[in-house]
Length: 80
Image (cartoon, rainbow, N blue to C red; front, side):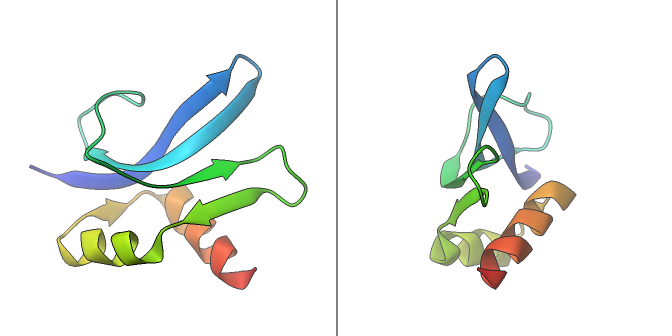
């Protein structure tokens, strides 16, 4: 089972909000998640990024790989 840390789109049409989740790589974007690590709201100023660092580190140690967009969000959340 190959596991990825990626974004799952939520919210209404034209007003997306994303959750940072753990899912199998082959699962569709809004499919079944294994665990939820945080959220991302791009409409706030500055964008709201919430990440549970303890869970993130645990999943990375267990072999989960972050997508490029999640890597960028985690890096940006560390700066603020």
